[in-house]
Length: 140
Image (tube, rainbow, N blue to C red; front, side, top):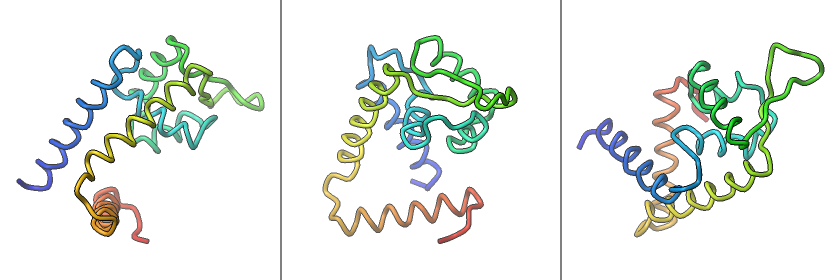
């Protein structure tokens, strides 16, 4: 298989397994990525979330609207600046984020089953290089 086929197949299978484990949680496509991002960036503005999650701003707005309607996040303006909404996890959002995080750990453990620590590290470093190459990020 070529790299593009492997990447798309892995993403599809990963999402299928993720949502099978999230069944009944109210989460839909896009929600886990945003919850994962907010774990480290709670209170970030929408523009930065879009950049950090590689989501187009109009798509992000739609996803956040759904998350807000379900009580997963809340959006606030800070310091009277109405140009930017900042996104915060609610109590329900924190609970869902922890659940998503546990599932991500299980799926990664499954993906790396049979890999030695060195193989896992080598793969991850190589994948970071691929990401940097195709995203235009500087190499470290």
